[in-house]
Image 1 (cartoon, one colour):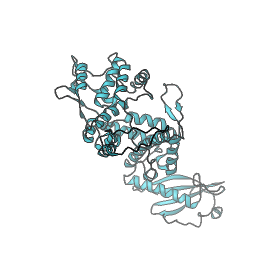
Image 2 (spheres, helix red, strand yellow; image 1 turned 90 degrees about the horizontal axis):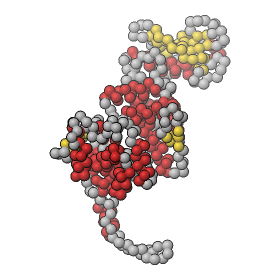
Image 3 (cartoon, one colour; image 1 turned 30 degrees about the vertical axis):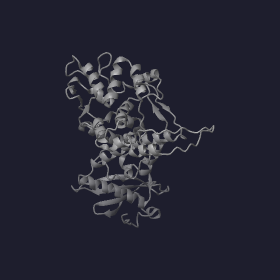
Image 4 (tube, one colour; image 1 turned 180 degrees about the vertical axis):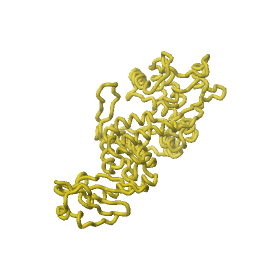
Length: 435
């Protein structure tokens, strides 16, 4: 902490009572070109900071009320030491502005400003997932933190917000114009608690990314406030749900014809909903048995390999169509858009009697899980799904792969004949499992 400058005229409340009221502040030199001023009014005084710029002009900043008649709180009323600390923060900002390390602002730069600039930067780079991240920020970050000045954010405030998100009810899809609906979660259910904390962690990732962007662009002096905030631990364990072959058939048969093609496409290729919606006839190469995904989540194109059943499906869907036509379209021929899949798959799940209802992303999990259980190497699955490396693939699917350890244990564990609750011996048979 910087050494406190002293001034016998203004550094105590009793000393300031002896000063005459005047417009010109009583100045205390803090450092070269930096001054703390006390302006004595008729009833009370205020603190003012003064900074000499590189152009030898003077910049001024009002800091707040002096503790002449009220006890200092460090927020709106300051004693001499608190006022000097606040002045030093402002001096530092002005110096960084002069050096080109901070952007000079006419108004406070808020969290809402940081999120806006961050999302715009991602859009300019062509990043994927901006739409969903923006919707999440609108719902969970902006209402709580949007109006706060980035420079005034504290670690405690961000931690409090993170905990509030983790304990808040889950937001439910609501029609436009209606009050946002929520659904409470069971705080006694470990899985429900884990899910809410995982959601809070994802939102914290978005918030930190926006604030780090603001820091790099010179809108914040330091990233310390949010750098100290750590996400909830042990909440992102892979919990992958995949459909059995029977559930896949029931779901497909329960879909309307146009949506059925999308569901089959997801199960047979592992593509995401948005990727399927953008596939054009020209992207399908039946000779090589591949589909080109031009825009993936990671921003890189990839070729998805089609097995026999998938080749037949794509051959049927592309027959006689021009190269610019979409492979998957709605019943009226229009393109599928964001969130158009939610209601159809909910309805199909109900008709197929699959509980809980399937999410479209679980069709991608089903494709990958079937590959893993068939013994396909993790590197090959990662390439099919478009993962940057095998870490995510292994996290979600490695436990499904045939395992030497599991096979060895199941083949050699002896029959203990412990019996059932009724006392009858258990019939142990050797099985070859999937791990």
